[in-house]
Structure formats: C-alpha cells, structure tokens
Image (cartoon, rainbow, N blue to C red):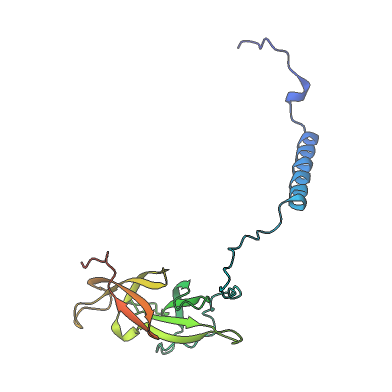
Length: 192
C-alpha cells in the first residue's frame, strides 16, 4: 500500500464535538429563516368597477355524518372516492362521493352522490344522486374538471352477468344546468 504524499490533518477526522457544532449551526439557520421568512401571500386580482366581492373561501363539505341513500344491511356505508369543485358557479365547492357497502365479498355496487353546504348551514346536505347503487356500477375514476363531474365505471351488459365480473367499461360526465345535473358521454370516452 502506498503512503499519501499529503500529511494527515487533524481536522479531517470527525469527532462528536464536530457533529454537535454542525447540528447546532443547522438548527440556528432553520430557526432564523422561519423568523425572517416572507409573510403570507396576498396576491389578488384587481376587481373591476362593477365586480361583486368574491365569496369567502370555504372548505368543501365533509362526508362524515352524511346519511347516504344506500341499503347496506348489517354492514356500514363506506366512502371510497371523493372529488371536490364548484359545480354550480356559486363560489363554494361541492363534494362528490362514491359510496358502497363495506362488504367483504363480491363487488358491491357504488352510488355517486353530490353534497353541498350553504352559508350559515351547520353540515353537509345531499343534493343529488348521479349513479344509484341499483344501477350496479363500480366507479374506477372520479374527478371534477371545468365545473363538470367526470367518472369512469364498470358495469354489466345484462342482469345475468355475475356481480364479481363486470363486463362493460363506460364513462360519463355531469354538468349543472337549469337546476339539474345533465349527464353526457365525454368526447374522449371509448366503449370496450
């Protein structure tokens, strides 16, 4: 083994005191940066002369404590997917919930429900059923885009197809129009 041409330096060996000093310095920098950091963002769009004030920011309705219209017998209803967005243009978000019975066997059908919460109201209110459990659908994707609810789901070509084995894949889009949700098929949807 060849010896190094550079003599060993005492400071190249880390001792516990070096680690303590480094940790203390890092902690001081982090603490100082949190005190001296920038304030909260305050950017806002300038309102025009006839603009109405924007509604206060509100949280979307929660799904807890909601009595969904789904018959589950001895098992409980389970929210398996959620999406939120302003569907009716009032500035307050709605929650779309995919719910099925918490069954250990088979593929329980899903229900898709819309929840809203108005100003001054103490809890969420169920305002629409987009997919009823009796339709025997299993929702695979759910989103809100541009004020519309988009869902992909599996279904059955006939009542003879067993619940375990959906054989049809579909997509749907719902948009709030004239005080009802109007269903359509998205342009990019393909049947299987």
